[in-house]
Image (tube, rainbow, N blue to C red):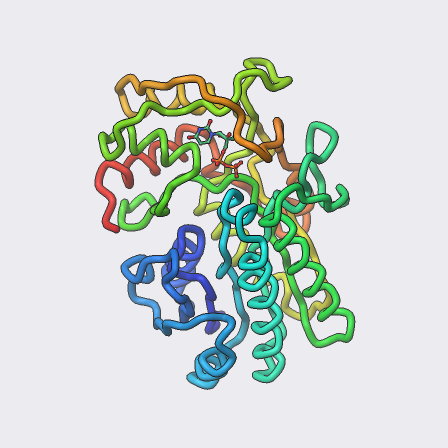
Amino acid sequence: RTSHILVCGGAGYIGSHLVRHLLERGHRVTVFDNLSTGHRAAVGNADFAEGDLLDSAALGRVFARAPVDAVVHFAALSIVADSVRDPERYRRNNVDGTVNLVRAMRQAGVRRLVFSSSAAVYGNAPGEWIDEEAPKQPINPYGASKAMAEDALADACRDGGLAVASLRYFNAAGAHPSGMIGESHQPETHLIPNVLRIAAGADAGPVQIFGRDYPTADGTCIRDYVHVDDLADAHRRALAWLEGRDGFHPFNLGSGRGFSVLEVLEAACRVAGRPIRSIDAPRRSGDPHRLVASITRAEQMLGWLPLCSDLDTMLETAWRWHRAPRF
Ligand code: UDP
């Protein structure tokens, strides 16, 4: 059965991959995005409304266009260092924006919401694999804004009438195999795009390795990378799973495996077929040394499997994009 899905923030990296995934499966998609960090070209053939979640009138108009079955909410700021400089802006955009969206959903009688959350809600979680019961102890204002938005959503669920799946992404990576959409942030702070942009000559380099004295096997930080197309698949499953349910349901999304910065760099050299220059640099503040997901809950409850989240598939699809980015 096909539905009409409103994707807030659908012009961004992960959002645009979900939009494509839903369109490919026959769903109708409307994107609502203020284009502050997203790209109009990433939206493709979906209906598009330019607007901001803090603009209640614009939000009301988009719900009034055509009946919406469910909402997916990606529209947030996500650069940790910026959030440290201007926490108020992060709270306004990420928390107030979410509260506004819930109000508009209520007014329009829409019950189902899939929310973009983050492993950043956990901060420095203890243990090898982080599951959804780990305490929420964010260590930067970005993570705090996601935790606060989750709390606001859980509160909104308590008085009934709303069903929320909060998807806590670990490190999104990769790109659509067509090469038509991919990751394009300005400025770019993430490891894989930084490395591949240097490999492609779009950036002079060298790659900075932020910290080699962490308590890990090779001294660099370990992260759990998950393919954006696997994330898209999880969103579609969560939308279906929410039907007939209510309440707030968090799910970790990762591959369940960790790779160090040096392992990513080595795999990127292999995939790009060329050496990539790197230098050691000081630790970046606020970086936990290891973040790896336990994904049992998403596997068992959503029937989800991260099928394309092996390091080579993520780097190959990302490399296809970074060699010839379209925006
Ligand atoms: N990193 C790095 N060089 C870069 C970008 C990132 O060494 O140019 C490291 C960073 O310190 C972290 C890991 O790579 O340990 C992943 O960082 P990213 O910004 O991609 O994601 P995060 O886990 O911070 O969300």
